[in-house]
Image (spheres, rainbow, N blue to C red):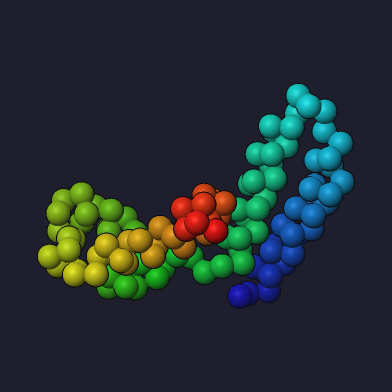
Length: 113
């Protein structure tokens, strides 16, 4: 991880801790939904900065140039279980890695944790 990314991660961590410990608890009831959205966004940013991009692994596993290529090829039927026997597992791994970043509570519920 580059120094710039480490600094960005540290700043997001400080913002998350400050917001959740000092600001969010004092929000009036009418602002709690907005506060929850801010907490969620900062949490996603923390996890995104602290984890490798799942899209990179997907692109690498399928041996293609980009996520956009994969999406287009799937829509056009150029990538299928016929051309990639492990396609379902590869896509499931990608989805779980994305959910671990963007919605870990949902992922944990689906896995029965």
